[in-house]
Structure formats: structure tokens, C-alpha cells
Amino acid sequence: MGSLASPLPPLRSDAQRNRDRIVEAARELFAERGPDVPMATIARRAGIGTATLYRRFPTKDSLVGAVFADQFAECVTAVDDALADPDPWRGFCTMLSELAVLQTVHRGFSAAFLSGLSGTDMAALDEDRSRAVRAFHELIERAKAAGRLRPDFVPADLALVVAAVAGLVTLFPGDATETARRMVAYLLAGFSADHGGPPLPPSPLTIHHLLAAVR
Amino acid sequence: MGSLASPLPPLRSDAQRNRDRIVEAARELFAERGPDVPMATIARRAGIGTATLYRRFPTKDSLVGAVFADQFAECVTAVDDALADPDPWRGFCTMLSELAVLQTVHRGFSAAFLSGLSGTDMAALDEDRSRAVRAFHELIERAKAAGRLRPDFVPADLALVVAAVAGLVTLFPGDATETARRMVAYLLAGFSADHGGPPLPPSPLTIHHLLAAVR
Image (tube, rainbow over the protein chains, first blue to last red):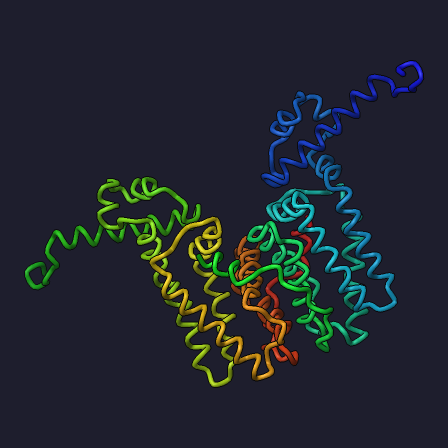
């Protein structure tokens, strides 16, 4: 079999394996502790030397970018899709639901996103982010112009959605995705100019969750 | 001055001082680590012996009850006041806003409330809590009967409000109370049957918060 296969040169393959182990270790550690975790800790978890880590990823930014590249791309796609929808309000609703679900599914991404507040610089992702923010602004203007989004909605209100979903991930980890759908439906009804939010998904929570929360 | 004052007997005073130190230490530690913190740690922080701690508070429940008695009483009062309002929807809106602000101001209470999820038994507060839950159910029924609260609202949706505010406390500690008011106004607009939520308070967040969050 070895003679039939056409393997990559051993050095390339080792390098790729190291890279995968680093990204995997970083993804785990970001999920556990946020993206401020030291590079040395990531090297230790990956079972490689610090020199090897810095050879693959000269800066923390480049590593954060590699770990969350897929999720950032999904965010950008969600905003682009929303902007391409001929009905800007439908686009807006779909986008917020998708971003909320993304936040509950990729908790490492969410943790990085949140602890990013305390100063991690993700310069590698700057361009995508700026484009997504511009598209988000454009979408808001169109949904307001269509009379569907209330005029006093501000772009920073997206931070309310992110915070609300982050609270669900912390408080109801087993039901975060389902509760996030219901939360977003309520918020969209609140955001709408004409009470035209999407239908409300059923609540996975019962009065027992509430009692447990108070207990 | 000493001869004019009528001091408590020294023993009573010592006992009171110990009690105050214990409650203060417990309040701090609950705020820092939630109510699962061991009794011995609380005794150490209060600078007293474990035997003295157990003489004052024979069970963890009695200590949790003492620490959060005021906040629990405020919760019960908020619900009672809401039920006493001749307009059940106005009562409902006022109550949710008050509870959200309470949650942002007394963060120790909120932390206890939240980590209570993992099993702390606050039996000492059981009666008040049960009464508040019954009153909350009654208020929901009245607001629905008045046609102001949407019929598909369920009592467990209160957990969504608690989680949303908890997320704000974590993400925007300096703006938690203001952002909570805006969050609750949006959610109430979403909860209302006729888009009749309270007016939206201005957002203390700017696009820079959002960029910082993504950064």
C-alpha cells in the first residue's frame, strides 16, 4: 500500500500535523479560558515546543485567526446573504437567528468574541469584520426604509442580542440553541416597527427551570 | 459620652458584630464564587472560628437566607406591587424592569441566583419564593386576560429575561443597568400582544462597543 500511495513529503506532513495540533489545542483553550491564554500554555497542551508554535504562528493574532476563520466566514456570509435578500426585514431576521445559533454552537468562538472585549487584537480578521459591519449598517438602513425595523433601533443593539445569547449559553447550556431561537424571536418582535417578528418557537424550558433558577 | 449612652450588653454586641462580619464575608464570597463556597472559607474571611460560624448559622441555608434576605424581599415586593396594580400589563412591565435592575445592582444576589442552578438549597426562602411564583402566575393570567400579554408567553420565559440581563452584567459591567432597561423594553415590546411595550430608553452603547465586542 505504501508503494501505491503518493504521500506528502514527510516534512510537510509533520508540519501540517503540528499545525493541526496547535489549532486544536488553541480552540480548546480559548473555549475554556478565552483567547487571553498564554502561547506557552497552548504549546504545552499541543505537546510541542514553544519555538515550534512561534514558527507556525508568529503572533497570537495569526493563531486566533486560524482557530476562528470558519466562524468568522460564516458571520460574513450570514450578513452578505441578508443583504442579498430582496426583503430586507426577512434578511435581517434570518441573519440575527443564524448569528445567535452560531454563537450557541461554537462556544469557543463566542468566548473569544466575548473576552475579546478585554483587548485581544484580531487584526488578521479586520478586513472581513469591517466589511460585515458595513453590510450590517446597510441592512439596517434598508429595513428601516422599508418601514419594518423601528426607527430607534441602533446598530449597537446587536450587542444586546449577543449578550442575551451569551447569558443563555451560561445559564442553560443544554438548551442554549433552542432558547436562543425563542429569545431572538421575542427580540425581533420588539425590534419590528409593526409587531411583525417571526413566529415564536416553543419554549424548551418549563416552570421547573425557573424554579431551579430561583432555587 | 459613654455615661450618657445606653450600650447593649457587651456579649450581645460581640455576637452582633460577629454576625455582621460573617454576613459581610459571605456576601463578598458569594459574589466572587457563588453560594457553593465552603463554610470554612467564609469563617476564614470573617476572621472567626468555624465553631462560632456554626453557632450563628447552623446551616448554609440560614446564611444564604441572611445574606440575600433584603433582595429576596425586594423581589417579593416587586411582584406584590405588580399584582396590586389595577392595570396588569403596566404592573407586569414595571415588575420586569425592577427585577432586571435589581439583578444588575446586586450582583452577588444575581450570582447566587444563577449558580443556585447547580443545586444550592435555599429552603429558608422557600415560602417567599413560592408566594412570589404564585403571584407571578396570577399576574400573567390577568395580563393575558386583558389582551395585553401575548397568549403564547409562558412563565418560564422569565428565565430568558434573567439570562439576557446576566449576559449584560458579564459583557458590559459598566453599563449593565442602562443596557438592561433597554433590553427589557425590547423584550416587553416582544411580549406584548399589541406592540404596546414601554418607550425605549436610549442606548448607552455606541458602535464602538460593538466593534470592541467583535474585536
